[in-house]
Image 1 (spheres, one colour):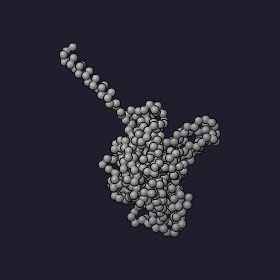
Image 2: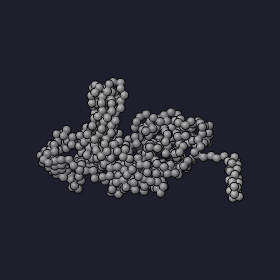
Image 3: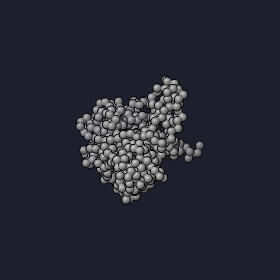
Image 4: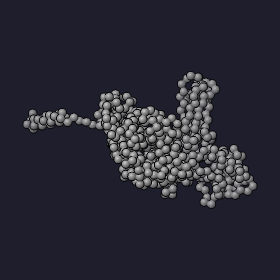
Length: 512
């Protein structure tokens, strides 16, 4: 061995001895080191460690093995002062999932106002002579996500009351209030057929009072006997979609396996699988391709039910209402403060994206995501959010490219408390453990006992690898707290119990 090699070996040994000595003197701690209290795969977070301070309790909870390899941001503030009392990776930008709706909802409340209403109009560029309308009939949408079949029925009744039996012209759908981009820029193709990824149009229709605009409810029931085709119904009834029924009714007691999916780029809804005689129904909210066309088709049916006919060469198409057209009838939506109940309680993605476009239309004269998101960013800055450190890609949180930190979310929730519309905003948040669907919302089956029940008012969020919870809670000593919990990049779930454990620690908090 050369002298040089011997010197290198001696140096390596000396270095190793020094490292071992330092480790003995200063034990290593790391966020990625997990207590053995929670066994791998256990769904119960580490909350049984005997700890006294709030920080100790939360740090113990964050050692749950399911968080290993991911990152969790936590930010807690006093609601009356905004003072930060705990932050764990609170400044790290993370994907918010549906916590993005806190940003969209607060800015919409401020820009549009709690009493803002969407509208839909029926207009004509012609004249009524006798019982004939000579001219085109326009159905003009202005973004109302609450429009339903019963509203189109009322339009038809209003036209009938004006003495109109025939329309000598075209039936034209006008959705030009917004641009024609139907999907937000990062929506996954696999979500397009599902109600959570429904297309956004200024003229759209909801099948029920959850107001999942741009969808139809597909219901599958068993046939009378084994071998029969299952019975399929649509709400609303429409010929705009094509049902391809490949399913089979099987004998009573057999397993059910029904799938309902729309083909990409078409309105063919494919039903496959098996449903047993006397078995429970299967339901799916299927998003349609081009919801403007669905609305027009259902409106035509409403006219026919009132015996109002299109005559001559009249047909159905899309177009733009002339500026001088006469309004024959119209409908306004419920005020925004009421729409916020299904929007926030049920975490409705379509409502969020519609609000983005509406803010762009109202503030910039452009009903687009680009205009709306730009308006949102300006308003968020006024609320005390550092907009230089956030990325906004949509209004719903479906995008995996949205970025915001837990600290900025808690800042937002602090900054909006003094707004006149805040009580309506707060009332729209899901409430833990309250079983009524439009009260408890997405938290109705969580934290239903102890100090958290009826106490946690917060927005949930969930997309692949992401779970979030941000809102308000009152501690045991009466301290009002704001919190934001953002779990990203987890692989093994569920992780909602971890969020619930942190909320419980906050509910038990006593500052003295």
